[in-house]
Image 1 (cartoon, rainbow, N blue to C red):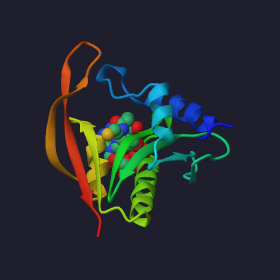
Image 2 (image 1 turned 45 degrees about the vertical axis):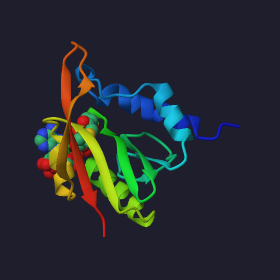
Image 3 (image 1 turned 90 degrees about the vertical axis):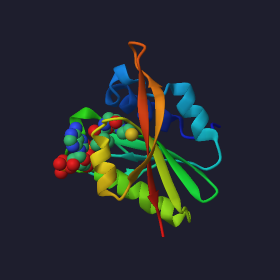
Image 4 (image 1 turned 135 degrees about the vertical axis):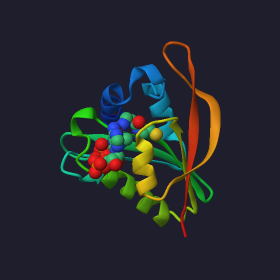
Length: 157
Ligand SMILES: CC(C)(COP(=O)(O)OP(=O)(O)OC[C@H]1O[C@@H](n2cnc3c(N)ncnc32)[C@H](O)[C@@H]1OP(=O)(O)O)[C@@H](O)C(=O)NCCC(=O)NCCS
């Protein structure tokens, strides 16, 4: 039997395929997602259009997150809502769920890398994340350009 729910990989990949603009090179491939789910400390959540969140929910999936914790830190590796379900508050609900879960896991520092100028920064700021650094040329765009990443951090008490 598989050590992780294969169905979760399918559902993550379905959102991945439509959520990340291909020109920015942010999306992961299936192998990267499957491998990440096998690692100790990896967490994921799938959100349905009605805002329910579970690792393997019934029915349609509107978005997902994937994170990895090491010691008292956790990195939000991927976070996306499919285009047709955006601007309805699902991003807020899913991000809050991730933060609450990390707090329950006794994490003290949450962080993520975000493409420079991604409007997702507005959502992260609303939940207390703040930019703490720049990784120059972190993403490789489809036209060969390199795009800077902003490191965002949230300290939990
Ligand atoms: C970022 C993302 C997850 C937001 O999902 P969402 O479900 O639309 O989020 P919400 O409806 O909860 O909106 C949260 C707030 O974020 C801000 N926001 C989200 N998308 C925005 C946009 N395109 N432009 C401006 N503000 C935006 C708004 O303040 C919004 O609140 P409002 O709708 O009340 O004005 C979604 O746009 C997405 O999947 N983007 C592509 C993948 C991605 O870039 N992920 C982040 C990687 S670091």
